[in-house]
Length: 406
Image (cartoon, rainbow, N blue to C red; front, side, top):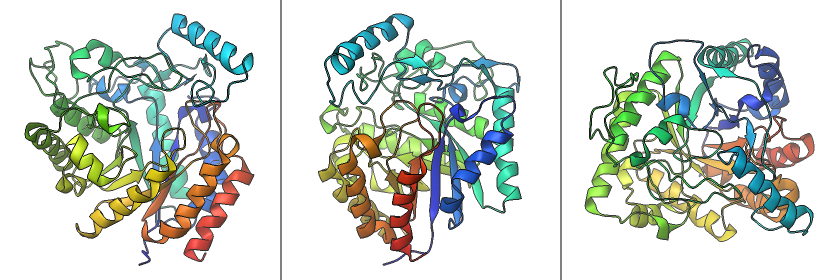
């Protein structure tokens, strides 16, 4: 069955801007570079990835435009100067001096700061508005969402550091010396007197982390006139990427997770809730991570994670089939987005150069299932802030054109 809807969902970070205070040129260059991808889209959903979402979790609701916060200005963020030096020495010994080209640390690359520009809420509001203005001028049907990650990647997260009780377990990210676990929506928070948008009198003792997160997402997206949120890295399902790392799938956890997604859907109303999966099929997420079928139907779209740095090729086809099968039983919800892999905004690898086999396999999978998916998603800038080079971009675009007969 061929579907008529075609969504294009690029991820873009502030690294594309030479000057965060004057974003118009960078935004125009973005739309120019990807215009061949965007012109066939029924809906363009720009996932703007400021950082790891710390500015959402820490948002106080006052609208103070000069408040500063860290953003994803690093290659291979790892927490501190000491950790950076340690990581780089390990990288030099194994990769440059030793010639290693393995998963870790080669793909992560060296750790360095790409930009020393300072980000504020005021600058971010200008960036959001610049995307809106440019899309309107070009007559594009665009929705703008902000990214929220459950883990410690990409940049410093002040809120997670203040509330370690909200985190689940400990993790080692590829090449990064950051061990804090991801957010657990079912954890309970300790009281904090700081003013938050969703808790103007402070966080009450024993408040569910999920309730706080829902409130902050609601306030932030409303106040900044955003069209929704993109929940990354299997948000709400802690135990990254491997089923045996998931918490016990108890009836209580299953009920709690469904309650979280239901509350989020209720407060967001018509605003979008996009979600990045675990790299595993629906059946595995339900069995191992305590997800529920009807929770998926509360989402607007699920991105099938095909990124070669994590996924095994044998998982991709079962994952796609499971998403399509589930949506067919829930009136087409959620939309299924097929992810393509070129570069990474936060690490230095370039999949089209470093793992060509996986890129070609993604092309094969799209030829087989692309006509049944509702759209595509991809990282639109690399770790240096540059857009995908034309050759790699056009090779994939030609596959998409063939599938849809454009």
